[in-house]
Image (cartoon, rainbow, N blue to C red):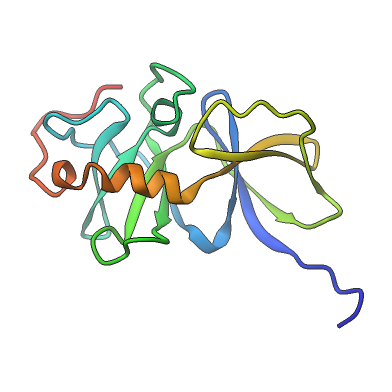
Length: 165
């Protein structure tokens, strides 16, 4: 129909030092009070394995993986995401989050690109202004590629110790 505005439902997801604008189409659930079980010989950004609905999900610290921070505080809240790439081997994964995500409807009236945005991470495609908040658009392909590069690590049994960030 003419004049109909396209809308995408999503969440503004707070991390440490950055917000992400994530579409609902890839979000499954926000889970709390989970502590990942560390993988042996994993990079710092790969926090470990989360038990979620009788599945083991790789859990990622977005800020460390994206080079935005060297360390982050341990948190017990994760955003469970649907994979868009290799759904056979890794149908779901989790991103550590901080604070409480809030819903937003993205449309041309409330979203605009941040002019002269400095993108310091290969995991962020662009920065946008959404209802007065700056948020990064996550590069889901790069996130999943990074996780799949560690596929051999997270398909092995996790160590008994909890992840320390």
